Image (tube, rainbow, N blue to C red; front, side, top):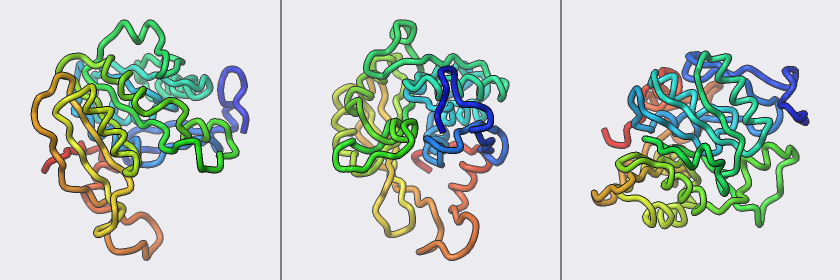
Length: 259
């Protein structure tokens, strides 16, 4: 699939339900498609009605609009480098009846209209993989969503600069990138909280959620891990999410780091 100068043709899109059908978003048939990661990220953001929220690298808007479905009355802004995905995020907002400001721009050089603002919460699901040592995806849009071009520290710096004092920055990322991510967060934010995400009980974490607070002074907290799937292995058709995870993914429940 190739996006034209404006965006993805309707024939190249699928309609996908999130949060048990509370929100339906268009995604490309081929290219970068959202899984559960942005849904878990959105559920973990401690936003309240009236808050200003920024999603850096928003893609088609999955995390931003899942958050909006859970917390009505937010001021929504997204930044996306790929013009076709930014256009899709705007179309998804219109289809969902959401008022969102989606700006086409690079995290490494944010547009002036974003640099002029501060936000109560900044969230991000950056590309997970370093470009070196991996085979690129065939689809350019998917590759851009997976392969890191802008250093992770730059993403964190951009997020911290845009956060109002007392506001939060929340990232989801691969567990193997945690040392680098922690270093970047500790340089710019305080009151760090880490939530490991285990695929199954007894297995190493593959994903982590990390949150920091602008100007925060409380000690670092390593929370107990969340186990995503029940049982030792996948043994039947359909998903096997643990009840707490299913409530987040299907019912739009908040994801609290601590019980």
